Amino acid sequence: MKKYLIVGLGNIGEQYAQTRHNIGFKILDYFAAQEHLTFETQKLGDVATFKLKGRTFVFLKPSTYMNLSGKAVVYWLTKENIPLENMLVITDDLNLPFGNIRVKTKGSDGGHNGLKDIQEKLNTTLYNRFRFGISDVFSKGQQVDYVLGKWTAEENEKLKERLDKSVELIKSFGLAGISMTMNAFNGK
Image: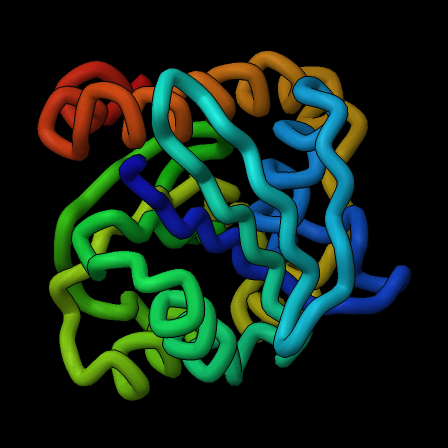
């Protein structure tokens, strides 16, 4: 049975729950609600498993805070014996318009501290990532407030359709592979 590690990046704590920076957690929570999955608090994160067509998806929401996500990623890849190419990291991206999706097999951290820590701990930039656009409509010097800010009413209205698309993307990653998933979802 093929196994996949799906890592949603975010910060623990109620004060972060509805923020743009926590889109990784939000996507995994939405997926779990759709499929009636329950997250359990385990070592270095909250974990749920989902089985689909002979594949097992291990969903991880690291409890290490965003900037130390790499520790949880390395632990769960090792514990579950999942090859690096079967991992997908979900993160927010300021450089993409709201709701736009970009799936890549490698790349820089783009200034994202969660990705930076993962790359340092894995010692590679060659891992799959799913970037969810949160746009960059903030005033100079307001980036932290914007990223840690709550979704606007307009964004919340459009979010459900984007979350549905995100669930499809995760399933596609496990069933069709990274190349087909990039072709089907990038820019959508």
